[in-house]
Amino acid sequence: MTYRELIEKAYEAMEFAYTPYSHFKVGAALLTESGKVYTGCNIEIASFGATNCAERTALFKAVSEGEHHFKAIAVVSSSRDFTYPCGICRQAIVEFGKDIDIIVAKEYDYEVYKIDDLLPKSFTSIDIKY
Ligand code: THU
Image (cartoon, rainbow, N blue to C red):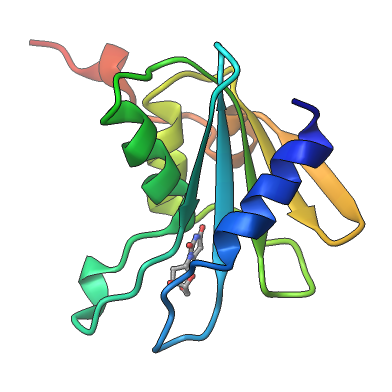
């Protein structure tokens, strides 16, 4: 699976975005270490705080099927600009490691980051002292 192919999967998932309020569509495709892909879209709820981002939809689908080891996540949106993961999604991504490639894409271009670029000095499990 190339990163271009992963981006294409994210665009396919974006088609399912449920966005009656913002009309802003986001798609994500998460590649596991074993080569499986889990996709996600944003899902908006009338009580806005219950809305779920595309990245977390993909991540939660994967984790709910036993996956914990990820290689990359591609994120695309209906915007002409890059869409970077929101703060909550950054926190959810770092939960599963700092080596995941975060691919932020638009139609003919993409950028690749590590979570330390997007969420420096993060709070993770090693900071929880019992
Ligand atoms: N959204 C995502 O799906 N991912 C992000 O990282 C940024 C924001 C969604 C949530 C909401 O449905 C819409 O974009 C506008 O905030």
